[in-house]
Picture 1: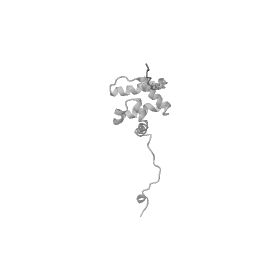
Picture 2: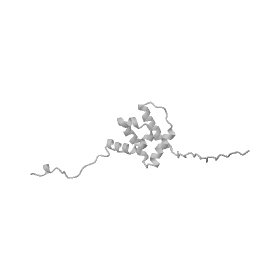
Picture 3: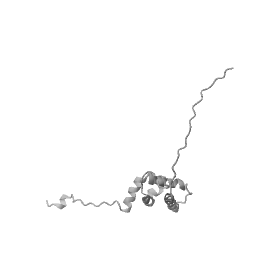
Picture 4: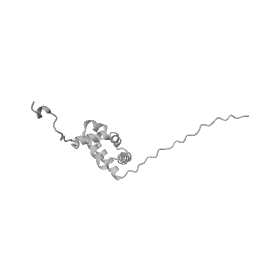
Length: 128
């Protein structure tokens, strides 16, 4: 008897993506403080703090955000009616960082520009 051999499909190896989770205590402290602030207004269940700390690490290492600015920008976002609802994790904070950083500068008054240019109002400056 002859046996028919069916061609075997090639085996595709699935590899797991290796995630760098080398956060340190500072990252974890910021993550805990963000959770404390959120939990003070909305009672939520405890998130995976290592994942939160890892997002803080990404803000610092990948996005090159100074670690001392992260909590300040989060607090500014938390004072805003719209952003306080939408920024509920470090992942969302990282996603919207640019907008939130600019907003935090405007709300703290650090973005106030002084206009030292000469007045362009010719009608007041000249006698016609």
